[in-house]
Length: 388
Ligand SMILES: [Fe+2]
Image 1 (cartoon, rainbow, N blue to C red):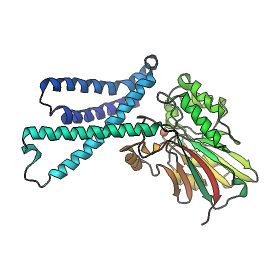
Image 2 (cartoon, rainbow, N blue to C red):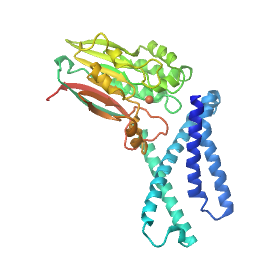
Image 3 (spheres, rainbow, N blue to C red):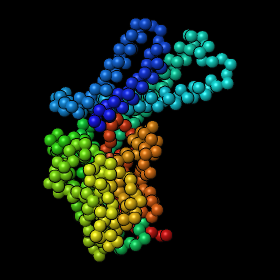
Image 4 (cartoon, helix red, strand yellow):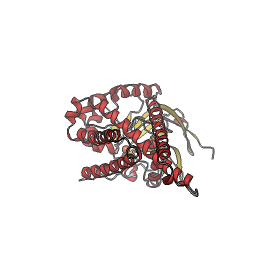
């Protein structure tokens, strides 16, 4: 039922976008033959955009034989280009209306030849800008993850936490677009940071164990003093959650689903708790259950939660720091703006009434392989005494 709803919304959105593109780019053309060719091109392009994800879902074997990574990358790159074109068209249409406001001559009363020339110039401008945005965003996205060095001030800071370091990676999305090579490079970068503890905050996979299990095995090479902890994201639930949790446990990764671990760091104590994804898990994610029995007993209490939600509950439960991901900070505009309407915190370190919440921008990416104004991220956290 949910799949049918997604398909319907997707097709409706595509139809709206394409009717807009047709009216803007094809309809004004006067040469009938060229117009016909462009119309066919647009229909083929439309079919290309709509079909691959559903073919991939319904017939994964066919997609595998046809080299799905190349097809999906090409497909998503086009989706990015289309997204930029739609936004720029929309913005330019508003600007155009404003420019013609209050003038005696209207656009419609201009000489047809001059009107066509203006339309073509306008369209070329939009397409060029979209092309440049897509290319630049693609180059930015190809850069290796940036290491963000974050210092967390704590009111009560035992000396033994001075050298305690958490490294967070999130939203890696190994699947049709990113594979084993990316993960091998990532594991090496994380190990070089010499973490005390590694936190993976969900959306690790886009695919079944049978499809990408051999790539995920690379995570068994992660090295840290207190181990690797994992909480599920929404994409784990789309990809066979139970099977994945069993697989990750076999790799030595500790899963936290409304649970915690109590660590002795010299004379200090650290509680690491975790909740399953708030929106897709059939088991309700509950910060109170994740700290149950040991509330207030640790010098530092850290909650791992895929989505940056329920911050109030986490704060009331007694956590000092929440580590989240999921948003990707929007990856590129307009989604960088849209995501701010959906989530209270979308990236970086935020003070939620005395509890710190950090949102990782995503170590991998999802959808178009594009980033503009956001960075692929590995985060390392160290702790210091608060001055206030
Ligand atoms: Fe997610």
